[in-house]
Image (tube, rainbow over all chains, first blue to last red; front, top):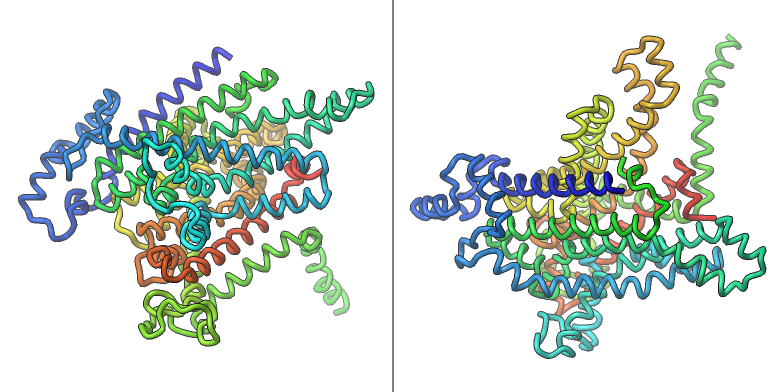
Length: 317
Length: 298
């Protein structure tokens, strides 16, 4: 465990460093002048020169890349070149909205997906199981932006039950929650299907295990076997996947945030992209990558903690 | 003469002995057949779209904009009075025309990298692991966004970006397979007989990684279609007036309060397409790799 942990941590640090180097050199690995690309074809030469100096694009490439990585390690992601606001401040102001969104939608997905999976595993090949399995595949394959658009159409535009735009009043929890529902459901859709499937598979595997058969042989009640012996073990892989899911949702929030015009990390990166505000895109993407990496690390470690039978060293080959 | 006839008749029978069983397996799974039918329809529309589409996908008719479905326009019209059915049909050109090449490039480049890393080991392997891990540290959509922030939006760049974000997956799976096979006894025996690295790679390792690659390919196609549509929806992929499903969704989204038909039509098209590819991909996996089936179906 100690060796694995060390290896995993070293790898995480390396990955973060490479991600920084990649984002730092991004504007140089493609042909063309990054400043001209950012400012568009109508930019005046003096403007181009000013931005070039401001963004330190006049310095040698390796210096720029190292400078970005060094600053990033010290919590400085540069400044937005339109409003001159530090990128870290921009990110900090919207990050909570994205985190609430991701956590709430994962919670929603677990509350619906896990019981569905358990339910169909206890009645394999029944009609309920079949319906659930068709339902899960349809949900898994539904792109998040399609789910978001359809929900927006039905509940905000047609029925007018829920608001369509923004995060609502941050000091009014009820209003904030109302604005959270549709985006969270849209993001949860894929994960409901995915969790239902995963839980069904892992529960079925456990139900076929020898120790469950032994429990039956001892005459224990079905209820006791299901809840005390089967369910606990079958949910272990799910807990690990939830960590990965959180990372994914944090990064995948972009569509939902754009469609519902919700301030958040994804929306920030999108706006940066639209205005060619490169420091925002670079900083925002790095933060998403960091969250993603740490969520994955946490998932991996919790997997081992929850199920000591798993040899993590073997898993990473 | 008679002997000739017999050999001619027998040869195909021997060669095809593997195929009927695959089709037989496939036809036992209705979901897979359903998926295959959807894929075939999409490919048919991809090839013959221009001659099937009732209207030009860019012909505007301002008099009849944002109309609900009618006899003249089966799926309604968009904000410029363009026929949505025609636009969705021609949209297969972008959807499949981006997804197929992108996934194929990822497959070829990823396989080569994975084979090199798995076979050579040492620092080559370590570099590959760190690089692919770092690339996979970004959710694939964020990686695509980061790359597109410095690239001009075009079909070519879209293919490139999707290919880049999918390459690590193939490199990893091929590397893992190569490592497993390299240590197997039959390769050891072959090496003892003096086989070269190239021979071992081509004769022993390559055929063994074909099945897992096919499975990954089939599973990645629907996500590639979704990625293209998503990026085009955000305005970072295919540019209007080119009829991409993502562009149609975006234009419909702008007018969602006036007419819901554009969004509804494009959403359903995208859902059916991804469902078809996914169902077929999963069936393919169940048939080609029965080891994975056991964990899902009892």
